[in-house]
Length: 474
Image 1 (cartoon, rainbow, N blue to C red):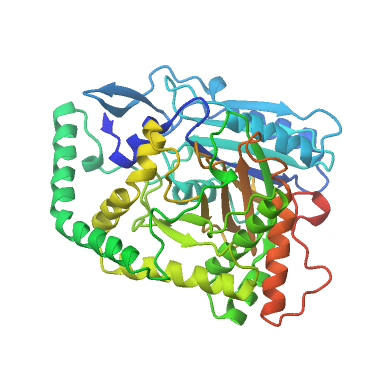
Image 2: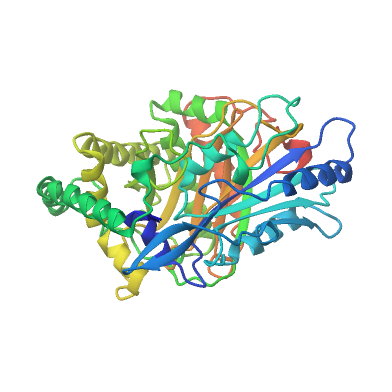
């Protein structure tokens, strides 16, 4: 029996029918040269179904004791409840694939079983095959998900006997100190963790005081937890979802960063700020004050593949300005402000500081008592991924698109990961709250183009974003 950390427990407490708390990914595969899609899929599905004995943590289900959640082995594991083969209806366009992923991602997972699912999807008109997987956020964070992906793939097409992620023995095993067969030992570990939390309290309170003071003297680079404006992004959500995906060349974004003397992440946030400004202008709903993004930052210092080790910073997206240079400079200053604060704090202190400062949003998510107050408008997450081409049982991985979480009062999430010289964006939104959300893909391209022009970079005619369509996939 293993107790979930307070962070991991939170993802279970937040879950509701309209707010599933799992993360996922859509992988596009090009079958090996000369092999028909149907033949490849038949072989792969048959191969994957052989692995009906998952390794930890994918063999674990939830159980509750003493008001807490624990992981315990699932003695009645049934692979059929987790691994499914589906076929798209004709004509099998990317549009149909994204619609299917949207519906699958909207469904809650059964807590009586291990909290993961995997789907092999064929029927794409271009002959490619998709794999969509989802895992509860209480089990993994974004960085851990990317580690799982890489360990389930190969760097050569000649490797054709890889086990699927749920049966991969190369996962780093849990240390004995991380697990306990005795409830009392687990509770003792939790209490020791609480002692560490209390030790960090004085410094955390000092930093909170500094934050409140900086807000009162209007530091232009500090983003407070009370300055995010109300917007259409911050309405109540339904259980419906819409997923959109697209890739951009890493070289284009790096060139902008170098030309404007900012970081790659600053350019990504500026693209998002520009896209959101254009989208909200279309709806005649752009707030006068700039939107605020919550940006997860990994604190993971080891090679563990499960759990959550993430801090959060707030970034001014500069949506109140039309000038792209002014926007990216505002973003860079606000991000650096948070990074400088975190540099003087331990991992525990950072986590406690963030939990305190985000208390308003956390209270709203758990209770809905103060719907007009939120610390941020949108979550934008950038997860590092593999730099080289990957293969899955001989098939080339054409794209890896993240599918994340939307929250009540935060109807849009933009998550991206790097892969093989590209940044691959996955946008997930409440379909009813965010109409025509797919337009954001074009607005992201427009935002990058305006930054290139501002940096004095000649935009090549073929420098278009790479959609998941076959003809434009890398």
